[in-house]
Amino acid sequence: MKTDIRAYTKDQLREYFVAKGQQAFRGNQVYEWLWKKQAHTFDEMTNLSKDTRTFLDTNFVINHIAVDTMQRSKDGTVKNAIKLFDGLIVESVLIPTDTRTTACISSQVGCAMGCTFCATARLKKQRNLKPDEIFDQVAAINRESILYHGHKLSNVVFMGMGEPLLNYDNVMKSIDMITSDEGLAMSPRRITLSTVGVPKMIKRMADEGARFNLAVSLHSAIDEVRSAMMPVNISNNLEELMESLKYWDWQTGNRITFEYIIWKDINDKQKDIDALVAYCKRVPAKVNLIEYNPIDGGEFQQAAASVTDKYITELERNHIIVNVRRSRGKDIDAACGQLANKS
Image (cartoon, rainbow, N blue to C red; front, side, top):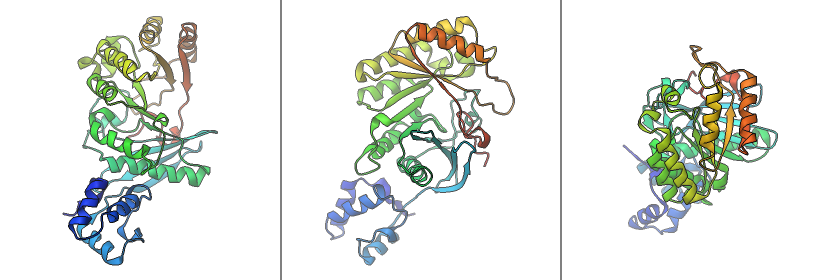
């Protein structure tokens, strides 16, 4: 089986060419084609001799993703069903607004976290995505942003399929390439990693000097309520999560975003509001109230608008930044929590 050449670092490519009796700068050229120019084939590497391209094609492969199907929502949202080299499918989404375009990308095929309100959780986790597979999703959406909106991608959110912190090394490598001048050269400040909350990995990110943004899917600041929806809370409860978030704040100084959906008869009471306010006061944070996107079964229902208003009033009264996020792409199952490979 041929080796995927994108598993090589630039130094390893340089060393490889030297070992084959060629000049080291050939490694630099190949590396630029693979990442900055996102070449899909060796034939595209036109500043290499034909013999060199043939040699590379004989010994290596570029396991590039392919957009299997693309759906466009009436609101401009684009959902890509991405086919991987082994035939597995993940989904990624381009979310446009008047001022920016955001890529929502996946980090795993399926998910093992078991959140009861999420369609992706109904798919068993099959494998982690490699750094190049994550990078390719962003590159593909960047091309779509230019094609449909006339400008480069503005932001990236790791909010697609999978739990990013359970694919830690590959996700961090992908962020390195997305932000590198040798890759897509995006600012880390335009990247947000969303997690259900894995305290030891949040601390590791902080220790390693993460410069991107951190968002936590919270949905309740009461342990028994959160545990019923999100099994991760049973082994990593709210107190342990808070400890890691305080550590993140201490090490990085970056404000945390809590993602929060309000459901009827689940977290729509005054005690739920009070608990969230109290939790937010313990660490610099803002809250995104997210519109719920129903999945099959109807167990969860969006709370009344009046409840959302109560949340907003109490959070603002306590000087906590709060935003309401309206869902995009619901008509093509591209909204938050709906990614389930129905295609």
